[in-house]
Length: 145
Image (cartoon, rainbow, N blue to C red; front, side):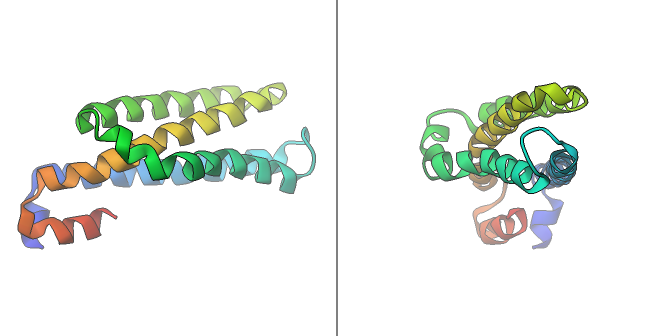
């Protein structure tokens, strides 16, 4: 365990993962608050259900097969491209959110962000064995998860 915490690349990955998860949590809370305050499209419960549908749909459809596509390319490039795309989609969501008449675009951007995330997750998971020693792999995977 001590070897893992001395591995600079693994600590960088954990730091990036922590920042990403905190950011995703704040974004989800903000989107739920937005959906609750929005009067278009029905009640707050209906708006939150629609939001969750567009977040979960790519998980159901792509998560089981995304790893196959990730294995065809360099993990580092996939992580970079998907992280950049997620960043752009999130920024666009918060640019569009004040414009109540564009709520359909927000759902579309949430869907795209979720699609891209399904390729980021297996790339991140498969890069761990490349940055830690084999004897530390079980602990590293546990910490990373």
